[in-house]
Amino acid sequence: DTTLESIKKAQSKGIEAYQVPIEKLEMNDFDVVVSFHCLEHVSDPLGFMNEIKERLNPNGEIMITTPYSPMNVDYFWFHPLNHPPHHTLRLNKSAYRKIASSLGLEATFVNVDQLSFLSMVATCFAFALHGKNKRDKLGMDILKNPILFAKSFVKIALRDKIGAQIVGDTILVKLRRK
Image (cartoon, rainbow, N blue to C red; front, top):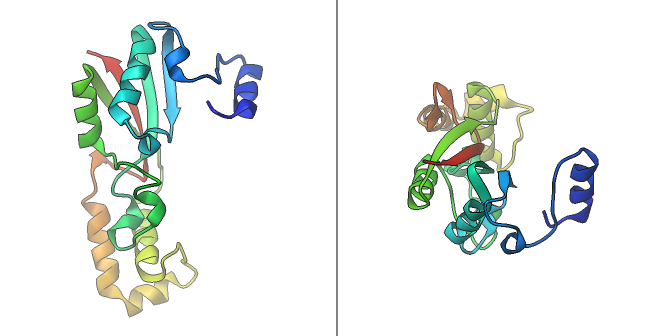
């Protein structure tokens, strides 16, 4: 981690944590390496993932979270922080499978967003209509804009799934050697 406060908090809970560049850590040493909302910001994502892989012991696991592309709000609304230069890439199951394959890893996906289907639809619709998650007059907005609501409903219904559950805006990916 880059934040000393986070390192100290993790260490106070008995978690082995470091504030050093990954290149300076020992090879084949770690059972688990976690990366939360980092990969979408690095200039060389494959190189970054390879550096993480090199630090894993033979049975180690990478646990990584990133925004899931497209996010619910992306269907009808452009947010500059979800695109370069802030986010250098967009990730979904297909992208993670390609990364995993190129590194000799296998990917398992976990849906971490637990929003209901209708909540996802309402969020998508609110951003399409207002550019923010404004839902105080949702019923009236739906009556005034039924086609946009229907489009939001369809977009969310067609999102990727993990098992039977629609993928939310964040995904957890577990990567292990094949």
